[in-house]
Image (cartoon, rainbow, N blue to C red; front, side, top):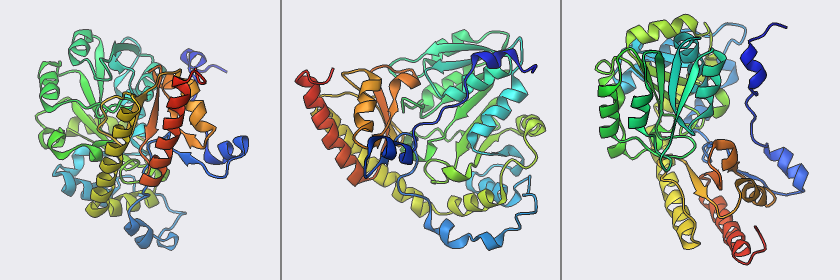
Length: 368
């Protein structure tokens, strides 16, 4: 079969272990999954109350334009409907961007490490990938600017970054945009936007027409708790959206997901409660890490990248055998670390007890 040659050098996305799989493998009664940055508080109760399967004609294609949700997003962010694009999660929009703006002979600049799907889809399109090492988890924006050349088509900024959780400040972002060539598309991936403290948010959507080469990506998968429905969106200028729409699938978001997202979008109380609980849990967890002498990356999200005294995989395996699924830092580009989603208070307190015992075993030389 004559597939793209690059596919021989790439692997399909490998999801983490599922709860039932771990439960069976280690004969455990209870599993806590803290590996995928999902919302431990679920989604808005209004979504569950207002949506019923009988409301939908599943034999009919969804509205490819997603008019109702598009209007809701337009009102929410005070942008034009034509400045929005909907996707099957923001992952889908990453693919669409790569398909529209990358090709053989072009290159794309990104941090290293950062969200893996930027590089994955750029390589599939035949583009050269230029990676600029992060500095203690932060994007080296000056280094990224220096890496841009006449063949650069797309630059990726992830803020808060995944997997580090670090944030790009307003001043540094604005300075970067001012210096970045206007024919280079800057993708600002804000999948964890809702978790950022209000005073630290970029609010780039307010200046979208001043940022003529920027697209903002956001999702309903994280704070809104709709990961299973796969829906996200992008905000950009009309000219950029028009190009992306050419390669976007005609019915790439389902009717059910559109309606769920619209209901969730209007439930500000749920988002306020979720983010407040997240901050409370984070504060206690970070305090505990400091108590046992462990460090961590600065996090403005619903996860923490924890620095470990032992090998990443060993640390993750230790937790896995005790019923806690976290993400090994080795797979994310950060050795001697693991990324843990912030769960509810009860689960995190149990995890903290396990980390205390783990640290004791490390100090006693039992665990190396």
